[in-house]
Length: 259
Image (cartoon, rainbow, N blue to C red; front, side, top):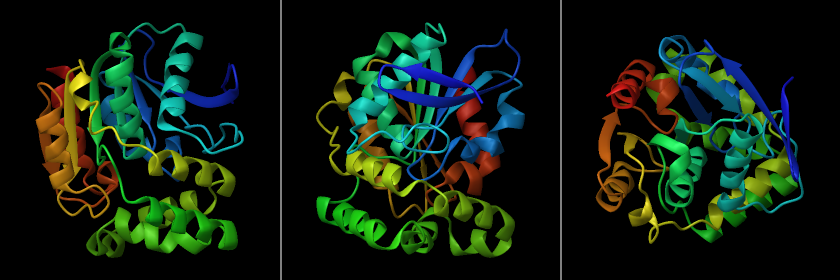
């Protein structure tokens, strides 16, 4: 199991694809791990060498004491690139991974060729809603929130027509480390990048799901209007658009990255 030993955390990562291809980093959403990108591997490895990693507190990465911040999670990415001796890469993050991408675009633009910000927003939810979720996990564990979260991640139609895929993602969420999840909830709760979007100097694609209740198309359009030169794409999906609308997601993202 490859682990990058960074100054204050060990980050689990995985390589897929041919070594001569340009590197594309995938960054997971809150409560998932690098397996959330399995639907992208077959198509994307035709063009890129994929570097998938588990965000601090997730998957097989170390759970360090919380709370975390988006700034902290973002510098983890830069330090991972340093540890792997990677100068510039392409980046695709969803939800919390997209927030990480926004920070990187504004604060480490020289390390990235292009950014894809999926199903994300400059500010998500209210402090009250995040504190309630944190308290629910503290008292009842991950299973206490998993069902409600899945209802926001996929449309009812997808859940009924793709039960195996839905169950796999539910299992990912239910087995997430509660302390790592809580620490990352705090990072999302405390993040507000609305005033720094204009500082992003990396070509960006903002991709959203028509039926996403967590990060709506309106919030995606705000990103496009605020980030210089950003482009917009929308697919018929809820929050985990890379799984629910895999074909359209892959097409939009590859079209942007390869242009």
